[in-house]
Structure formats: C-alpha cells, structure tokens
Length: 433
Image (tube, rainbow, N blue to C red; front, side, top):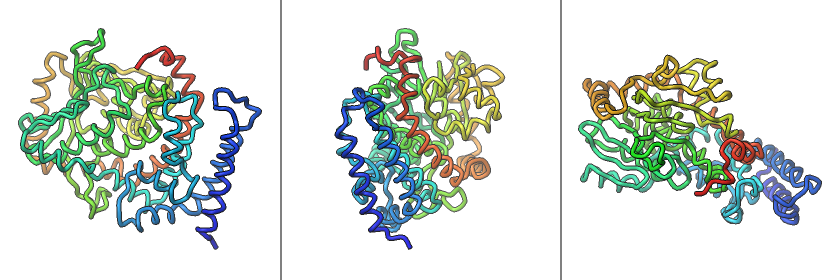
C-alpha cells in the first residue's frame, strides 16, 4: 500500500542529496564529463518519474483542493515545489539561473516537464489543468470592460480595435519581426481573452503589425516565431512553450472556458469566436502554427510559411498534431523534419490558406472575408466550429498530445543540440538583443 507522506519525505531527501552533489561541482561550462553531473541528473529524473507514476493524482488533488480551484500551470509547478521539495525546481532555484545563457544552465526545467507530463497524462487531472488554462486571465475582465466602452485597447505588443462586426487584434514586436518571447506572452493571451469576450463583435481577426527591419520596413509581418536570440541567451523559460499552447493558441482554437463547465466540446459551452489569421510576408515557426489553429487563413500572394523545427531542435507546438489534417502526413513531416518551405500561393500552400489576395489589397480582403463568414449569423459559425472540433481534435486528444509534448519539449529545451543548432543556423552567439 502506498504511503504518500513517507514517499514524499524519502524522495525529497534523495533529491536534496542530488542537488547538494551537483552544487559541489564547478558551474556547467567548466565541468568535465567525468565529474558525473549527467548521472546525478539522470538518476534524480528517473526517481521523479517513478514517484509521479505513483502519486500524480494525489499531488494534483492536494494542490487544487480536490480540483475545487484552478491553478494555471505556471502556478502549479511552483506549488508542487513547495508541497514536495525537490519534485520541481523552486522559484529561488529558477531565479538563481537568471542571467545565464541557456547552455550554462543545468536543465532544472526538465523536472517541470516531467511533472506536467504526468499531470496531463491523468485524464481527470489533465482535463482540469486544460480547463484552468482556458479560463480568462484575471486581468481580462477589467480590460474587456474598457474595450467594450472605448472600442480600442492598446497593450503595446497587442492592439485591439473594433472594425464593424469584427475585432482586429494586431500583434506587434516590430524590432524582432514580431517574434514572441516571455515578455509578449501574457499580454498576447490577455488580448485574445478580451477579443473573445467582446459582445459587440462576432468574429476576430489576428494580424501582424508593421516591422522595423530594413528588408521588410513598413510591411505587415505575421511573425518570425519564437525569438531565437532570447532563447539562446536563456531569457525564454521552458514554461513559455506550455503556457503559449495551452493558453492563447488553444483559446484561438477552442474559445474560453467557464469555471462551472468542463470544456470538453460536448458539454462545455464557453464564449468563443471564429478566428481569421492573416499571413503577410511570412509565417515562421510559432506563427505558422497559428494558421493551423485558425478557422480561416487569408494570405498575401507574396507570403510564405515554414516550420524550421529541424534547425532549432524543438517540437513546433501542436503542429505535429494539426498539420497532417491539412496537408497529409508526408508533407507535414517534410515541413517539420526537412524544413520544407511553402509559398502561400502554391498548391501546397493553399492546403492551409483559404484565400489569397495581393498584398496591397489585404485590408479590403479582410472586410470581404469578415462579411462572408458572418452574414449568416454567429450562432451557426460557432456551432459548425464546435462540430468540426469534436471530430478532429477533442479535448482529450489535445490533453494526451500535450502530455507527450510536455516531457519531450523539456528535454529538447535543455539539449546541447538546441544550442548547437542555434549557433550553427542562427549565429546566435553573435546576435544582440
């Protein structure tokens, strides 16, 4: 019979000894393989896997008061560190690595990935965690009220404006080709919340703003994916991937949840809107992933898409799950594993893009698409979107996918191969933030 308290004490003591041994060694860049840091980390991680296999449900229930309250995953991982010391890194341990390059870190965040993988693998607890991540952020209600009154809301990295029957969300990080990082994530999710909550519109449009790069100056760009320079510099934590895909990207795809209903596509009927995503100039990496979560993709005729996962060494969000529905398995594997580029205005590109327009006509095309998608009313549009979703990607499939993703992406994030790829293909060590 399992003894939760005894197991917690024994495992915490074991993990503490491992941390003490690791702390006696030189910092990562100065270590030799013979000093055994890899073996210490490997044994501790194997121990966490065994512990969580036995106690994941009990831990989640203790942290969530038997699922009576919702904790976002970034709260959950640190609450777990307090409940069972050593199970996941504490806030202090994560803070101690601030300012280090990614290659100088010990990969403590892998333990967060192991923990989240076990939480998501449990159907009841994993669904509850997905539910928590689909609730509007706490600040969204006040900002939604402001937007309802003014029709405009500027969050710097995301700007909302009402445009007829549509709410237009313009994502903007102009210095970095609209790339995403830890500083943009919460604001972007809040903007998505406000867009969905707006009662005066029935559809949402996501577009990239104009950028500063000399090659693309004053052109709209959907985005360059994750900011690889900040990633290399250790300024993007592992939790970025999980918060992004269980947060705002899943809200694009699934809408918002309400506390009293499980968002299972059958019984859960939270607020949601169809989303149009506009692909201009390029949609790289994470921004290509947004096209796969959209209800309709409008693309400029000179735009292209790419998923450079091979050159990064990470998993491109939910693209492995979603892209085969659009392109078939072979083309999806070529995109993800062979970095195949797609021109939006090509036979392969049109498998993802619904309508192509000249770049100078995008504004007119947005209005035309909005009218076409809403002139029969919002109820039918949302009902059809739900019906597609329950057949293609029900919440349980999403949960199981991200259980695998949580662990594998954590190991990718801590892998020397990621560093090597960033230096080889991105010349990251020479770039300035």
